[in-house]
Image (cartoon, rainbow, N blue to C red):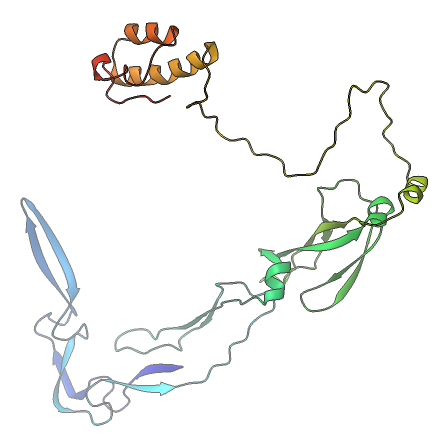
Length: 297
């Protein structure tokens, strides 16, 4: 680490001696007034003569720092990273930063950047000191319970004993298997279950061991073939160019036009009669009816 130190020869003067800066009167800052009409703004900035040092050098220039007041040194620091360190965490070395005349010595601050490996990035995620991951579970363990096997971040393999699954939305929680916190306590490991269903098995043998629990209704009105797919997401309804007319259509158009009427504060007598007869068109709804914008439907 490179740092600036006050010159030990001139003690930060830069020359044989110094005198108080006459520009700022030894304050290090100067003020100026800016007038804007009846208002006056006072602006404060660093003195351009002493550069905020409050004094200026006089006499011969220091041969050690060559008038710069500071010398530079290089130091090697050992930065210890604690277990469980977080992204953006700060490691501070107090009083080991740059020195400045008439000021307290600064600090050296390291900001941690955690780089995940490609493997960890795809398999693990972190929330505070907790770890989120997935673990595979087979059909027999789902039904009667058993053992799960999980390889942790440090490479150790855990055998996890679980009971039969009762709620498919729950995960397996391992207390104290998360990251080590700053106060010494550990977070938890949360394992989302990835159910492995065999594709090739003897249907008759499986039915003999696990008979169906749902019985056929007494009356079936038809048979259709189904397939698996994603659940649809409800979208906002569109009413433009739907190609039909009627009471439902008229109510939707009436609602749209009513909002326009209320915002423009105009009479709705002409438009209401046209809507009720379903003969209104975008060309008829114009500035002549008092609406500033054409309503498309």
